[in-house]
Length: 481
Image (cartoon, rainbow, N blue to C red; front, side, top):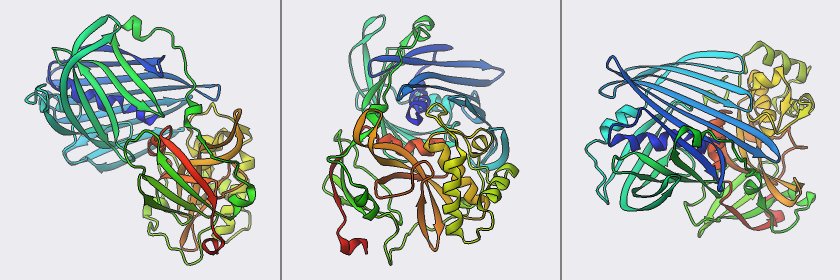
């Protein structure tokens, strides 16, 4: 879902070459089926330029419909100087609002998630531009084949800046809703954490985007320029959840998962090399085009983890509201008289498993405070609540996204399913806790580690759909000891 929101970043620089239309619509297709609409508007008034980009999608996940809406609005001077921005993201009923004002080298930011608001000041990314600045910066570039350049684009929804590398290609015929047209092909690479996101766009003689393609979980996402009626026509819906599953080469025994496993993972698309994190329980080594991943249910004796906790791992944020009175009260209620941090996390793990009574795929992604007030959801809700409860007790925590082995899931046998769990800093090392499943074992493969922010979470899931598990064997006894 994060990759879908990156559409705003991909499209923005392409309006750099000419005066863009005041209003433009796109129909959004995934795997050949219509899933939504994208609209971009630009208004110039009193020397200021306001650009809005709205994405409205409907996806399915294991038979459950998930609605995603993201609207980003930016305000700049006529010369492209960033002034302010806002972002409203809605996912399966949950809403996140971000408002920011750029003050030179800093941003005054106000965020609201799950009924809790927070104000803070953060650095403005050096050299970052918003849509009008990107438009002006690209005026001199033109569309001559072979032209290459890069720009830094700011994304309000995640408060991130991404480098976008652009290469202009040749003109070629392209099929559009209104018929075939000769358009210039443009290749782009977005560098925003995790694996680079690559896309291809086609622009007309006026240098306005007419088509965009981007890979998403092993299928092709396509945007086609058309009129409003075309873009807002009824969605067809598509369930891409099956494509996020990774098949195991054989059934994995419970005894193997409790002992330790060695996996050989390779990219199925021949694209960018895979990158997985090392943790106290997971060790990763490159071997040709593949990665050898060794996982033990507990950190090995004598093993050290280089990623020590940072202050932010102890602190509240927009998604882990660990200082909220409701969260603190729930943590104290859960642990009772338990004092030792490791025992506290085990107690919290069991508590969260029972506290979230309604196990549902329809929530999307809720914050910890939202889960406290309405205990329902899937693995992500279990993870953010557990992480926040741990932080409220002074324990450093982080949210892990990855894959977990399931003997059977949604009619599929021996598959690894997208999953989230928690790591806590216990006894000088990171240890995993999983409140959504019976606990952590070697069937958990970490793809990335974050702070509970959904945009960081979905960054790791960009690898889904391009993973192949070549081999899975138990770890030798001498390694497990």
